[in-house]
Amino acid sequence: MIGVLQMGFGPLGKQIAHYIADKKNVKTIAVVDLDPDLIGKDIGELLGKDKTGVTVSSSVDEALAKLDKKPDVAVITTVSSIKKLVGQVEAVAKHGMPIVSTCEELSYPWKENEAVSNEIDQICKKYKVACLGTGVNPGFLMDYLPSTLTSICKDVDSITVERIQDATPRRVPFQKKIGAGLNLSSFKEKEAEGTLRHVGLKESVYFLASCVGIDLDEVTEELNPVVSDNDISVPSMNIKKGDARGVEQISHGYQNGVLKIKMHFKAAIGEPRSYDKVTVKGEPSFVSEIDGGINGDIATCAITINSIKSVLKANPGLQTMSTISVPGYLS
Image 1: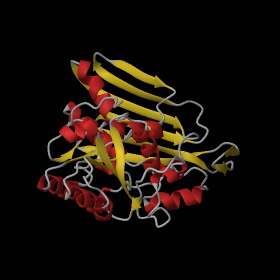
Image 2 (image 1 turned 135 degrees about the vertical axis):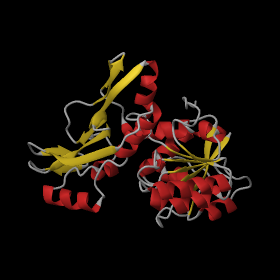
Image 3 (image 1 turned 60 degrees about the vertical axis):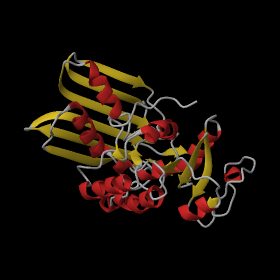
């Protein structure tokens, strides 16, 4: 049985806990969260289930003090910013626990956050544990998956990755993160603050380029609101005509002035068609498309859990999806 410490018990952490509860060989045995409304409560009751005997603690040290045996691995679902993650990584790593995190900037951080990446890498090597940033995107659909698809290519000239999704069934924090329901003035304010965007698009570009051996000398990114043409009402919000129903981001990666990688991300309430698509130009050239797209909340929780065995076997230090053994379904 693999014992898991979960750090972060918001919507994503709770969904992961639900999925772990259905597994045969994985069990949540400790939970840490700073929310005073959660501390001391049994996670079973917080999940709408029977009591488990596992209560929410305010720190890693407090959680471990309740246990006879430390957890085998930690799952961190707290922040998107790698800079805010450092202290949390160290709090876990010093107890010898490998880490799987959904922090988007951790998925391939060396280009955008080199100094912090090196700091986390050194912390993990000091305590001899591996640390992985993963999720559906970044972590799989727009970076890891396209990199594996190029395995059949003799030559690769360029890669275009598209993730277009209807955000209506997504969890509310995600809908807010993409600006759904905001008027355009508020959208621009939050964009300027850096709190409104899909986090990790540039990380995906750099990850993919690294995997296929393309040395990019310029990476650009643009962000725009997806404006609603009519009033929209969904369970989580009402959107007026002319307000934002989501976000569209496009990133380009250039080598010597030539476009080599393009990533197009669009997530919006009421998007008519969802799909994930990879177009490779090379030898052979091909298109691979997932009609209907992949539900991001389900997939992020699943890949986080399914990566646990790979992280347990990984070398100490900061890892990526390309440097661990291939994750597979954990029954």
